[in-house]
Image (tube, rainbow, N blue to C red; front, side, top):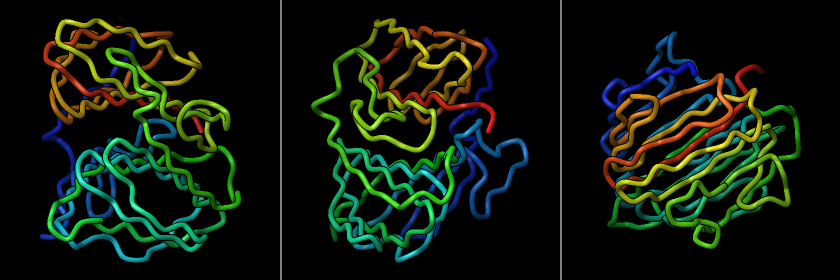
Length: 237
């Protein structure tokens, strides 16, 4: 197993008043040549937006953009006719393809929204823009890695244009789950949403990240009840 550890406090930091964001990889004004992504995984932004504020209309091309609210509500509108609210417990994906304009606003005027926005480089360019939103409650199983994203349209969760799989897990203290890679040529990036776990002698706490590769599976010991996001992606593009 090969691994790279990213401590939560080593991330890029942006504070715009209405928006507080931490960047695992280089993004906007944060540039670190050693933090340009992990294979096809290009962006992990941990965003906090106060009530009534958000990102106005802006455009994307040729990127798979995944949003996962952690608390609060995220209002979405786009140029292909989608408009609605993404709530905690849901996952949303937008394939930007040939180009899409969208907005992401706090869906509540009072309560803040906290969400992860993740960008994955696609394996096809200039596809037709698309949007998908799924509630994860029906597919999440306690103390297991539950798939919430894949390359397959008929799989559980959402799908994207890439040989990638995301899984979420809520684990009780003392559990020792194992994750089996769907493609052993891929790498895996773990992101700790809450709690504390140990992987390959690495102690991972809240918002820490760990990229691992050259493995077929890995096991994790849960030191403190934890919510974990596992992102399995190709290492070469």
